[in-house]
Image 1: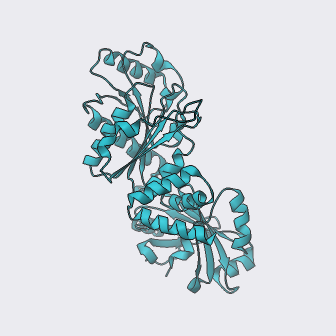
Image 2 (image 1 turned 180 degrees about the vertical axis):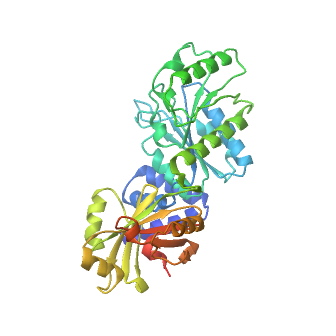
Image 3 (image 1 turned 135 degrees about the horizontal axis):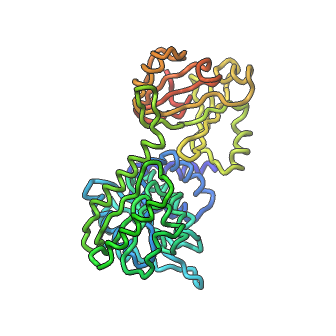
Length: 410
């Protein structure tokens, strides 16, 4: 176990430093599975949520691969580090796959800013391979700022990509012979941006009209109306407009999902950072969390806090287990008085100074007299349980996300 942790730590160090070979090795590890894959994924998911994931889906022959190639060129010209996950169908007889994107995208072979992983679907339905999400997590940890996910191209039920992507692009082409396809349920309903590719052909206007008509019948999407963009992937025409639409959709989703209003002050980036759980024994608690599929990514004893901590990544947030090393410590007294349970909730926010000023002005009882700076440069303050419904609330922001008591608070 210790050897595996050491190997993961070494791989993560190279991965975070931008080593492309380490990224390729890490992707292979998580695709193959095994104990090392679990530890590596847990470490990678600490850096999750930092990349824009764009799903590109649509029927076979729509030109998805050529369009993805042009999108990568546009992103590289914009200075982005790019990852591509391209899923190709597996043979029902041999289990093999052509992995055609490795052939189509040879132009990036010498560009370390582009990492392409072709994957076989291996029988997975819905257009994406089962390991695709894990590969995306590794690419995010490796510093890829935008990840393009190209699906197999299986038809109307190709909707699994919505679970992986922040923005889903549906590529259609004129002349497919079914003029009512835009009224059908399934993949049409998950699109955030519609693309009419090969728009230099006749019939492109008709496809656009059908999509617009379909949108008039669709349910509300929270204020976002998926735009229709015409492209010619072979020449790159319309790709700039497509990428601007993708970014506009991503920005609108962030505003809708995580922007929270506080009176006349708006604070961006409010999200759960971690939950701090006081336990009598981390070793005993790990058994339960391991059964849930959560792996400890980092364990440390903080002497000056008299606490032992273990971090378990959970999506874009984490669970922090807290074990007292001395009875007369903050966690020791908490366990003596209340027993095991939730000790604190940590929320990350952009604009932490505005939040502190606003809560102070409103008369919220604070457990900190100012915004403080912890190890690693993160900034934080505490809100007293009397104002939060009985739980200690930590507000963190403006720097490295806090991992709680093991960050070296003042």
